[in-house]
Amino acid sequence: MRTIETDVAIIGVGTAGMAAYQAAHRHTERILTIEHGPYGTTCARVGCMPSKLLIAAAQAARQARLAPHFGVQTGPVHVDGAAVMQRVREERDRFVQFSLDTVAAWPSGHKLSGTARFSDSGVLQVGEDTIVKARSFVIATGAASQVPEDLRTQLGDRLITSDVVFDWQALPGSVAVMGSGVIGLELAHALSALGVRVRLLGRGGKAGPATDPEVAAHCAELTRASIPSCLDSQLQSARRCAEGVELRYSSDGQTHTETFDFLLVATGRRPQLADLHLEAAGVTLDEQGLPPFDAQTRQLGSLPIFLAGDANNHHPVLHTASDDGFAAGHNAATWPQVQSFQRRAPLNIVFGEPQIAMVGQSHRALLEGGADFDTGTVHFRNQGRARIEARNQGVLRVYADTADGRLLGAEMVGPAAEHIGHLLAWALQQKQTVASMLACPFYHPTIEEGLRTALQQLRKKLPAGAASSGTGQ
Image 1 (cartoon, rainbow, N blue to C red):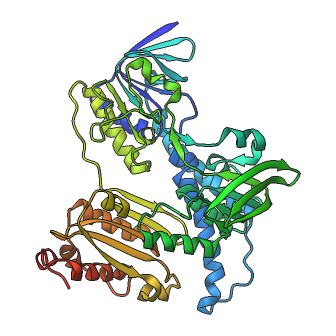
Image 2: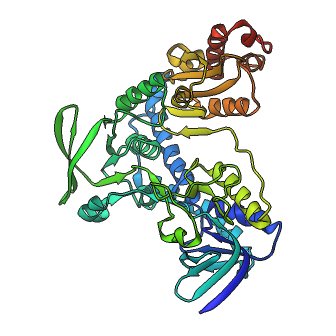
Image 3: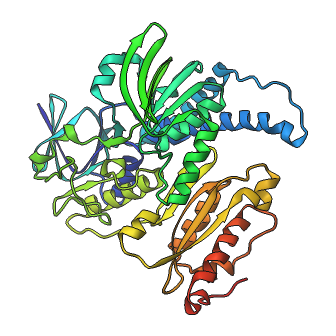
């Protein structure tokens, strides 16, 4: 049994762990990173980058099919599934290599392979033959797909998660997607556009994360219009068969039986903390088995343990994971002196068709928090640039504080949501008011003019003082 002593031990070397290493390295050379699997971030290997490669191929197929609408004749659209997946894998591997190159440049003494668990306060057992003692710890172990164990047992390799999709050599003929959240919605849209027979199975009638009733209704309506969906379904049974997977499910009072090549489970991801034995380090867990933590310092109580990235389940997107890692790594290296790091304005984007954007406080959060707010709305069916591009569908809802006109949040489904979402997130972080946002330029003709329409409507609802806290047309 060997013993390693260090200042900072970082468990997990994904996006958050790599950022934690860089931040801690500014303060100390005594750092040890511990990784039990292959290097390379979730984003690069199985997350945002390969999924956007698949979505880019799907978008190309959609545009080709839409060409006749503009008088451009392209002939029948043929999707070469093997070529699609080859590009996905090759480009995915390039992105992975970037992170591999970064880790390869670290000193070998800063890297340890193995599965870590706490055996005592300040002590990790790594594998069977290594003890690590550290002044402080960063937990950046990420999250993993939640899969019902009975389904996994029944279906074997015919049950897949998003972790498997991007290793496909070719596109399958059919896939049932269970889960209509972000991951399920994106993959269902992409696969369907690429010619795969898809059935999207959701719960509660929802498609995506929108909480505003009007936006959520549009999300569900547009999803049903573009891909075969049962958004309020209940899986009755699943079994392997000669064709792949036979599913029996109920929806709208009827029972259906269908056969697919695969069942893709996208019912959420959960922080990978269970095997760390956090209780041995003095960590108290909540009812869900998760440790409460300080959202600004990323610290677990007063312990020298910091939680970063998807492992803290706060906002599982890459830029937040990177920010978390920096804050956790800095505070772990300077502990017991720790500081708060302000979080950026919340921004979530779903790259479906059309896109969904969530900025700042959601409609539900505003209602539950008792906020006094007004709402501005624009529908894109008659919005100029959206009609020009035949993308005229969806709705944007913008929320502002009734007292001072300050932007509070927005929810949207529609064209260019990723870009409008960024504009709104920047305005929110800068604490802009509706009037000050309207004082900014809106070029004609652009989809962003739709945002101006919503803001103009919102300003008319605000009291005179709030509506005039700035200038603009």
